[in-house]
Length: 599
Ligand SMILES: Cc1cc2nc3c(=O)[nH]c(=O)nc-3n(C[C@H](O)[C@H](O)[C@H](O)COP(=O)(O)OP(=O)(O)OC[C@H]3O[C@@H](n4cnc5c(N)ncnc54)[C@H](O)[C@@H]3O)c2cc1C
Image (tube, rainbow, N blue to C red; front, side):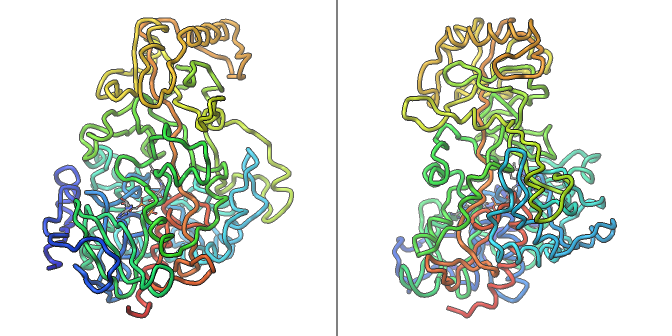
């Protein structure tokens, strides 16, 4: 196949123009006439030195570095647009260890300090869960040694970090000793949520995922990396199923199989597994199908395809505790209700999926942003309240979160003020019907709440059609109206009426004697009444394939699978939210894969 026919043009102009021009670029010739999927290794449709699977935070640095080092590189991307979760992220990147930005602002940090922070057994969250105790020393050491280099590399490849002191406001588990977060200015790159750039006044002061991805896509194009959109890797080919080196991949392009040979390396950057219900339930059986909103969807999914393809050729998983630990954003309370996808980046809390977004047809509604959780009650599938609605999710340790902090000291854990206050476990609690998950969670509110919040509870703000929002003139009618696939039983009308009546009595008395909400403020009494989807979102993947310091994938006996690399959310051993882990491991994998012996 002629590779030039399969190229994506990634000029700045077409990135900015026409609702993320990259999403509109399809690859007509790719896959045409491809052979059926077999494990034969003697026929290839495309050949290259390095295949990178996934165009997100891991994939882009890895691909650019390998190409700049002289290797030919093909990236395959399942979606019809590039960027993965990195594109819809908040663009905050916690890379420390002595960056030029830290030095400029007088922040003392070093690889050793970063390493000690991220492996400190003694640090626990207010809910008692340790952030860093189960991190793999080899993997964190490699991160600590390369974090500052990754920051400088990103800056040199077009990521415009804001010229402000590195901060620590975001919950990424970046360690207690130094502020390490850097903010990628959104500039005039189009935002996935809206399909257009930020307003001019925000472009230099708000970080966006586009501020990370778009400059890297431009750098990839400049370097000559080939990107094949709508090419979903379906399997990785090894010399034999459990031995020998990796030879290439099969990808599915609109039903056709494309066989791509990788002479040097295949790099897995598929972004994790929490969108795959059966895979995620290996870690937590509660995460059943009603948790149908993954942070980052519907832009891209985390379907465990990288993990499954690597496991099929012998790869091991690693660091599995980190997937079940109750810290950071492994699970999240929605910020927008009445829609399926209600988790949005912290830095852009006012923005949700808007009609201009290239994926709005899949998102279907913008959702209602909750400014004050006093404006509603949350009930489960049976119409019962279960927690103080104003409580949030899990937290994580960044600079200054443990005070006083002495690295490795027993007193760190001993001195925490225990606080179990998150509503997530209560929301996920099952009923006695054999189902493991907690079922849908509904926000119940009335016309007065709509006025206080200035909501407009009709499409496209809410999703009546797919059953993520309902409205009725009485509470009994509302309970009867809630019909959608995840509501396994009819909501008992009397139960919902009782819950609201009891809550209204708490407003009168000023005391929530069921769940201790501080001073319940508003009765729910004026029609019309609403039930809006407020079920927790699954978010991060923090466990995945076993890798070593070079990001090579290891098998069940701890041996390297030659030619196979991984990083980001598909790799295990390192509990940290997001972009720093992924970009840094992309930096490491990209540098190491070019030294791999050819197949
Ligand atoms: C809403 C939101 C906000 C966030 N904000 C921040 C933040 O501010 N700071 C931070 O540090 N982190 C943030 N994160 C997390 C961060 O975006 C991710 O951790 C990071 O992007 C993971 O990088 P990755 O390369 O592993 O996966 P991704 O960036 O998701 O890239 C994976 C890519 O692989 C593709 N893919 C998957 N399977 C296949 C296949 N079989 N074949 C081909 N392609 C495939 C996907 O479509 C995707 O494009 C946020 C995440 C979300 C969802």
